[in-house]
Image (spheres, rainbow, N blue to C red):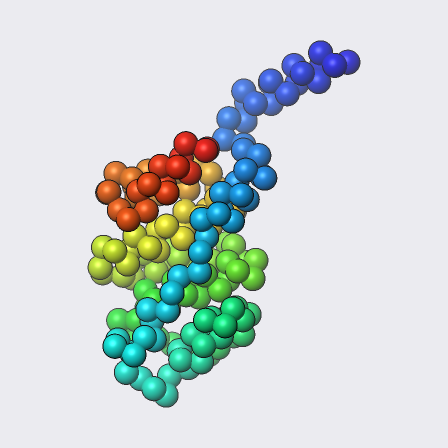
Length: 164
């Protein structure tokens, strides 16, 4: 009986090479997912003092992600703010457990940003959300891009790829 269990474990591993221990993946995500600072409504960039973005980002900064989501959903950002809007909304969705919705927003954020460094941030969060959603191959592909492009997340991406 012990031998059968051992053999079935080896067979499972051979036929499921991209299945990683959920605990390992959760630890990777927990260690690396840090809430991004507010660059969206910082005083030097954001001049619309009547916007609901200010309220949404206040809830975001306080860690009340559910209220932040509700507030974000009540307005349409200007096109130049679309990248930040989707990035912060993605983080909020991620923090309240809607990982697949977060993935969509991180992807939209990466597409909306025009500056390389902003795109990199969105892709970093996208890779972590992909890991959490058990989309390991997709996450690895993004992490490899972050390494190849010599981004600010290169070292962290390399470390995660080694763990996977």
